[in-house]
Structure formats: structure tokens, C-alpha cells
Picture 1 (cartoon, rainbow, N blue to C red):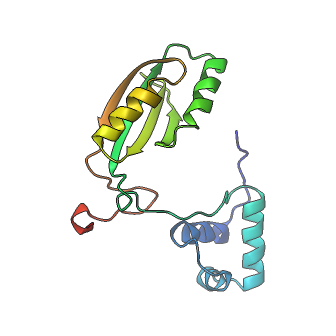
Picture 2: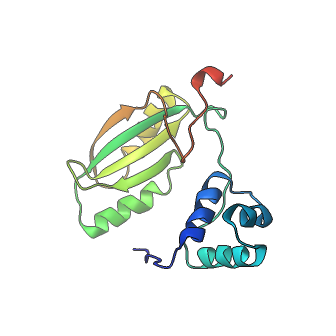
Picture 3: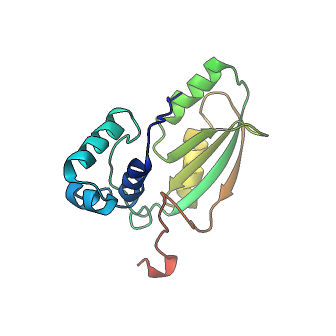
Length: 163
């Protein structure tokens, strides 16, 4: 489990809030917006990166514009929940690109998966050929999302504007 960083102050939180929305902002502009000069802002960024608070930077793409507009959430119940079984399941999930998220759950089922495909036909194939063949799967229940209200911290483009 990751260690908590206790010395994150108001300036660090402002940096994180801004970078979450504007990951490509210049250090000069970031410094101006948080009210510090460039050098201490750079030092804070470096410290946040080195201690693992900032894990990396990446491009966010619009999956709808790429034809991957079908989102399903899948409840997974396993036949075995001992550590070796969980480890095998976790490792196998990492090899399925259509599974965007996978969470071990405390509740009536063991895992919750977020699966993104090009459509229902694609989802059915992923479910049959990949998800159902994961180690120790007992059963699944699928819930299809009708609309994403909030994803990746940003409000998605309205379906009416996609074309």
C-alpha cells in the first residue's frame, strides 16, 4: 500500500488542482497562478513527483471519437478469494485492454470492472472470450452505462455534439 504524504500544503494542493485540469501548463504560468515564483514552484513539482504524489503525465483521449462508446460495469464473483487466486486474477486483468478499471470490492461480489468497447457486439465478444476466461471467475453481472456524466474529472462532451 502506498505511503501517505503528510506534508502537502495549500500551495501543493493548488498545484495538484491546476495540473489535474491543465496538465500541460508551463511552470511559469503555474507559479503565477499559485502565487509563488518559478524556482519554488519547480522544487514543489519535483518533490511531488519524487514522493509519488504526482505519478505521471498523460494525454486524455475522447473514446467516443475513437468509436469506443460502449461502457459496461461488470460485477465479478470468484470461486476462490485466497491471495494466490486474487493475484492470478489481478495479473490476468492487466492483460485485457478493454478493462479500463478493476476494483476489489468489499460486498456481495468480489470485483467491479469498467469495460469499454466499440459496441454491444464487441462487448459480448470481450465478455465471452476474455472476461469469462479470467482465473477463478464464478459468475458475472453486467450493467450497461447509458451516459457518462463525469469521467476522468471532466464533464464529457454531450452526445448531441459528437459527430
